[in-house]
Length: 260
Ligand code: IPE
Image (tube, rainbow, N blue to C red; front, side):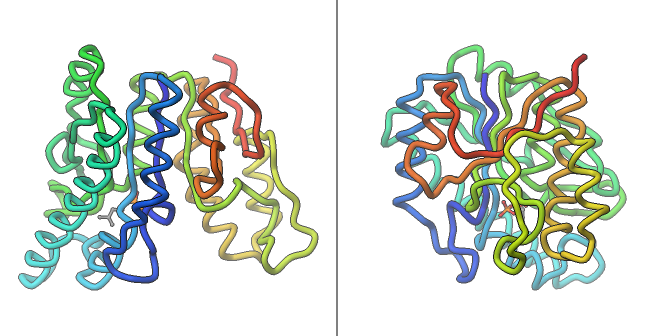
């Protein structure tokens, strides 16, 4: 089984509220279909979630009554995005079913408290394609908070030990520094969590990239510890996902799982 995340910036235009990249998602769906693999798919919220979540400060939890509307609206918008993703998968005859994070889990101070993995198992056993996504969820300490797609990836990877964990991004993978501003930046092809930790301490002048890399590292470290390889690849380029699912080496970053 492969665990795949479509990043929010691949499937939506992050600069404008609720703009779905239908062509990209349609092509990615066809790449998944052609590969004929068992898959759990997670997708990010992109501009269907982040804009409202920021506006209503949902990440900090429930502090003011007006946030209730914001939380409800955000949940509805990410669900709308999920429906668009499902339609794209269905158009390619993939039996995709929706398992929203607000149904399958709850958090305690941002950390997982209850996760219903059995729904994934039952749908997978029947050869459905379970799809979950970054969402607003109940949090027993904070009232509600955000469950990111990355957290779902981490939990499902450790639980189900997929063959590979794949993050579909709008970049080729990881660089040693910000390639847009630093000419010495090099592309990282094969690496380990240990090696990446050194990068983040060495390159902490590159705030953006470091923050991005640190966030990804926090997600990937437990996956690597469980012995699973994580691949970061560019979803805007044709067949990078398909080739990877076929075991073909393309331009991508592989963070190798530790020997367990
Ligand atoms: C965020 O999910 C969820 C909400 C803002 C409701 P992600 O963090 O997985 O989304 P992307 O991939 O960054 O867009």
